[in-house]
Structure formats: structure tokens, C-alpha cells
Length: 487
Ligand code: AMP
Ligand code: MG
Image (tube, rainbow, N blue to C red; front, side):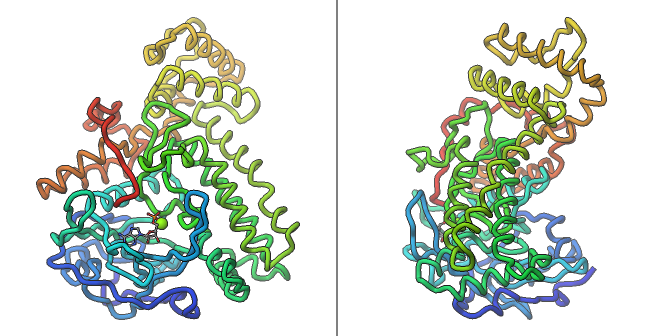
């Protein structure tokens, strides 16, 4: 395994013309220390595990020193925020250090979030606090373990440098990894400046690197947009199926690769509540859980509009027209698998009716699905699952239909249970679990809970009996947790 000194940087984004970014160095922080790291993410860079203990790496991940080959830039973008166009945003506190080519031939961009002010910081301080960094680190790696496309997190480095939010907190930096951090907003910024050439050049760049098979097409742009729409639809299906709410689905937080990007006030559903709004600041509920697929569709129309200079209006609208079907099919397939049913109209009605019951009875989404894995489909079988419901008669009626469907399909309980456990996680990053880890870290400098959660959530589908309590419903105090954009 290579050492730090032999990291092979190939900074393709920084080789683009300067229209796309500003060269800017991270601002150092005093006395950085490692809070936690992801050995799996480290391996993406082909780095030996022991490299994480080297002060040189901690200094680099604190933004205190650039490693040879790094070429630091902050990217320019724009975006529709809560429906309103903001003509200039950009990495206000994230700095791209470079792109590492690993032995498998993958390119991983290495970015520090919280690395200090950039030309796009506007009024912000360019920093991130430990609290939000822990949430982003844990959730990125947990999403990956759930099989959901996401940017990755390599490490959190902390510093006692004060950062002022509602209260005084301390600074931290998350090292994020992704094949690309290009967003819908990276295109939008040029459209609204009436600059066509940079849109084309950025599209060519993304196509060449991430959709290389399209390069050969005489007119690759409609197909490119179609692929983005498909990737976005697949991502939305995954979010809805696992019960993930992003919280700030502005177009500047929409990845061109269909990755989950920019973890802020996100939340996983506890009790199933379609109208769940995880962002305390989202008073209108624009980004409520059940709005996400439609918001993504709206965001795609903004991207399509931006790409219209490269194609006809008809081609652009055609390219995103399949989104509803792709989303619908992908969502139903995932939900049917979670219920152990073949995808089809019967699965659709059983799933939708179950979701209605869950919402009416305030049943925990993840716990219900995990316990459904052990459903006994025998005639007149008593299922303890009914204890989760206030309206037991309604559940019994649903369970009878479900059991009949399973028996008709010749579904065998033990086989179905094993398959369902592979798609219904036992452990998710519930807000209260993150909160406990954050309090220990921020109050006591005790990072053991962050590390424990990270390890637990790396295997979300496995039974981990010593951590049974981590799979439970949130305690009463957790109702008071509020998360917002101020991180
Ligand atoms: P978000 O919606 O959290 O992804 O952020 C929206 C925009 O605000 C992005 O352009 C960020 O870079 C910027 N931003 C957020 N927090 C800060 C901060 N503390 N300092 C500078 N820019 C920030
Ligand atoms: Mg953002």
C-alpha cells in the first residue's frame, strides 16, 4: 500500500479554465487533532491504514499544509434555493485539494469542508462546527453502507479554534471524497450569465469523465441529461425506500452523478410520517419527506433549461420525461423487495396500504420493516408485529391479505426472511444516536461514541446483538432535537 508521499494526484477539475473556480488555499487551524476516520474511505485512496496516524496527514486534512501534487480550488456555482434563483454561490467553505487516481483507475476528488473563507463565502466564516461535521461524516459512510450513492467521508479533524453559531462551538473539517462534486448549479451559473461555451465545456468534461460511452455520440447532450435524470430518479427511490430526508434540496445540492450531496439538516424517519420536515428552518415544508421525488423532478427541469443551449427544447424535455416512470418503477421494486414480494400491482397496493397504516398508527418505519422480515405467513398465525399498531383490527386485515399473497406466491418464510434482512436495515443514523455521539464529543472530547456509531452503521443489515438498543425507537428527549442549516 502506498504512503502519503506517493499519492498520485491528477487534478482534472483544476485543469479546466478558471471560469469554474478560484484558486484558494485553506486557512490553517491551530493544533488539529483526529476525531475519527473511515478506514474504508482511506482505502479508496490506496493509503495504508497506518498512514492515518501520521501528523503530516492530519496537518493536510486540517488545511494546514498542502501535499505535493495538490492544487487547491473552490468551485463556482449558482442554484435555486427554496425555489429562488441565487446567481452566485460556490464553495463558501469547501476547498477541493485535488483528485487522486487509485490503482483501480478510479479518480477520487479530495475536498475539505470547513477549510476557511473563499471568494464565495459571502458573509460566512468558511468554517464548519464539530457537531455538523460529525453528522456529515457518520451519515455519508452510513448511506454508503446502505448501498445508497453518496459522497464519502474520509475523516474529521477538529481544532479548538472557536466558531460562532447560536453559541460558541469549535471548528472541524470533514474530508469528503467523490468522483465529482459538480452540481446542477455548476451549470446554472453560466446559463444565467448567458455564457453558452462554459456550459458546453463543463458538459463535455462531465461526459468524458463520468459518461465516457456517450463521447462517441454525434449529439451526446440529450443522452447525458437523460442519464442524469435516471440517476436522480434512482437516488430518490433509494431515499424514499430507506426513509431518508435530505432537508435542503436546492439545485446547488444536487449532484450531477446522482450522489447524496451536502449533508445538513437531514433526518431519517422514526415513526412513518410522509410530511416529515427535518429542517427546522423549512417552515413551509418545501422539502418534506414526501415532496422529495417531485422536488428532484423540478430541479431537473432547471438543469434541463440550463442545457437547452446545447439542444432543442423538445430534446431537453424529452430527456427528462422518463423521470416519473423510472422513479416509480425503481421505488416499487425496492419497496416490493422490502416486503418480500415480487414487484407488481399487488405489491404496490399492499405496500401503499401498509404505509397508510404506519402513518395512521405512528409506527416506526425501520422497526416495522425489520420485524416484517420474520412475518409468519401460515394460516391463522399470530404475528407480534400487530403490537406496534393501535388499530390492531386494521393491521390484522392487512396482515391477512399479505399472508394470502405470500402463500399464493409459494413464498417460504425462512428464505424470504433472509432476503428481506438484506434490504431492510436494522440500524440507521437516527437523530438521537447522532446527538448522543455529538454531546460526548463536544462536551467531553470523547470520540468513542462517534467511532462506535461509525462501526455499527458500516454493517446496517447485520444483527449486532450487543447494540440492540441502537435499533430502538427514539427516547422522549429526542423530540426536542432541532436541526437547521446553521452548521
Ligand atoms: P448548503 O445549503 O448548506 O449546502 O450551503 C449553501 C451555500 O452556503 C454554499 O455555497 C455554502 O458554501 C455556503 N455556506 C454555508 N455555510 C457557510 C459558512 N460557514 N461560510 C461560508 N459559506 C457557507
Ligand atoms: Mg451546499
